[in-house]
Length: 282
Image (cartoon, rainbow, N blue to C red; front, side, top):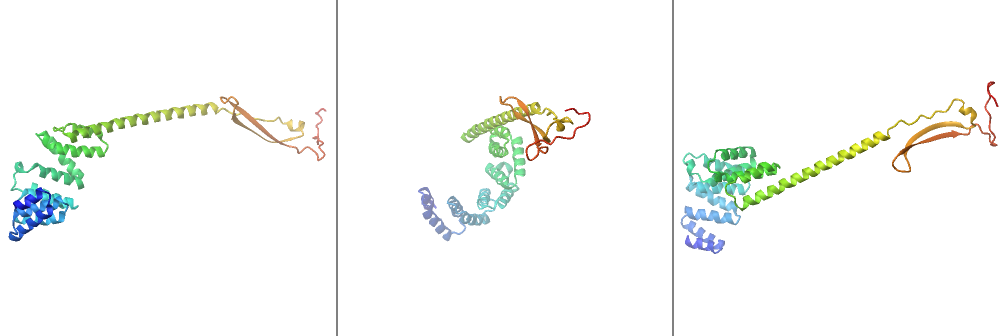
């Protein structure tokens, strides 16, 4: 066993594995060899091989909390989160284990894994633990998980409150505080910019409305006297008017268009005079 451990220390995993396998050939139930092999395989990403050694070890030592925890973490690594959580729940609910003797990392792993597929339950559990805990440092991990959750929902104030309440102000916590403060500052600046844009748009809209109201005056109605057509050889076809901008660019003016036709003109250019009434004078 010492030789295998020595190979591990000098970063020769292949040689270490061969030694552990030789030990198992002589003693297939060697707990230490099985445990070390499972850890070695997991370290190099061979999770399925590690899981085989862990399962063998659990049959030999079913109440070993740390081995059960290792199995749960390996299940999570291969994507079987639900069964990983079930293993952790089995550890926590084991009556043979005193709650005071339960390693803190077991509960933390349980909450982390539970959060992966049942956020509602995990959040409720973490909030309860934070509220009931008498040791603030024991819930720092839960506060950081919750802070990330609220950050993802853009509830930055709540996230910052949780991070700042962490008892152990390590580099991770300090960086989180700085990051959250920057995000909050950006949000405030963006909100102010948005409000200013809305205010500017409102002013522009009001100015446009006022201008429209100023230009919405009644156009004068153009009417010809009844006897106008009898005094003019041309016949009025239509009369139209519209508002146009004046030359100064500041005021408006009315432009009137009168369309006429020369129905009362002969082909030779002479006028056809209309019939005159007795009361008319020439």
